[in-house]
Length: 138
Image (tube, rainbow, N blue to C red; front, top):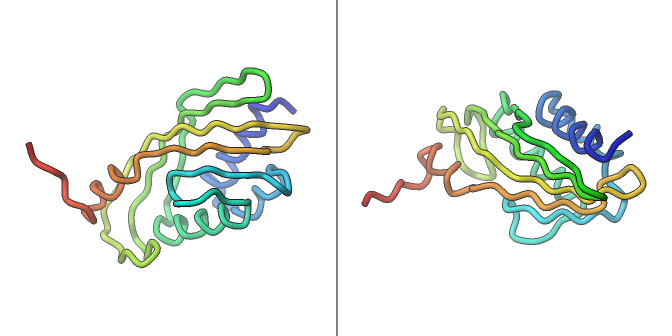
């Protein structure tokens, strides 16, 4: 299995099937995840918690892979996440509004598993789309 297909499997398993636990075998036991959705680096358990929180807030969460390439042990994926805020998201009550957020994910793959991940998305933009944070004028 190519490094690219390992990363793509994550987006299929989580973003389409909503199977957080099904992603566990894709990550090394000592994987480190750096994410703009959390203030600290995480292991898979922490990342899974973020994943569950998003599925609670967005029951229709989906992802589309826009671009993906690999070079050596790195896979770069540009994705578009979208969904409707129908449930509580870490204390933020449902707004009923939709969001669309493009993100860049870089995976470093070793021995068929994700060893390190950098996940960067504009969470401020997402919160503004949901109406939780006002959009600055001017």
